[in-house]
Each structure stands twice: as structure tokens, then as C-alpha cells.
Amino acid sequence: MSRPMFVDATQYCNWTRGIFEEMVAGGLCGVQATIAYHENFRDTVDNVVAWNWRFRQHADLIFPGRTADDLERARRTGRTAIFLGLQNPSPPALPLAHRRAADRHRRGDLQPHGLPEAGGEP
Image (cartoon, one colour):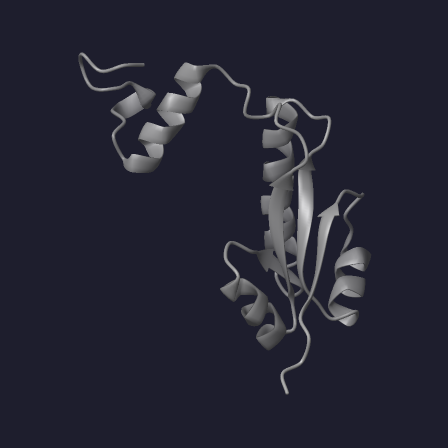
């Protein structure tokens, strides 16, 4: 019989190494950490930057979770996968042109300095 897999969701707290140690000791394979509750877009970006720092500083305890396979990886490596999530739709409320630029960046369609190709939409 396989062991149960424990996941905690919508956590919003003052993250510390001690909390990460407790998560690992408690056998949590995954935690969905809220990066936006009442935050605006800029504050949400700051939270992502802070999480990237935490992932580097506490790599022995946590890592960024992206798929369900990361839950098994967490169990196998004795760490906790952290899945970043939103509890509020306001952070994506940046101007449509910025969202289009971000989409183009993901597709690799941007020219230097984030400008679209000539004649393209912003």
C-alpha cells in the first residue's frame, strides 16, 4: 500500500526557515503559498522575488512546485514543493499591453527592449 501524500493549500504567513523545517518534519509534500491576497501587481511581483530568494536560501527544505510530479519528488527528496498561487484576481490587472508583451516574451516573439516586431500590436 502506498503512503498518503499530504498537501496544504492557501497558506499565507510570515515564512521562515523554522516553518519550512516544520513542514518537512510533518511530511508535507506540497504547500500552496499565497503570493497575492490583497496585494496589487507590484506587491505580487515583490512576493515572487522573495520566494525566489527563499528557494535559493532553503533549497535543502523547499523547491518550486510546478506539476503533480513534484509532489512525488518532494517525498523522494525529503523536501516540500511550494506551489505559488493567488487568492485574488487583482494582480493580473496590469494593462493589457503589458500582458500581451509578457505573452510574447513567453513565446520568444519580442524584439530587444520588449518591443514587438514592426507593425505588430503592442
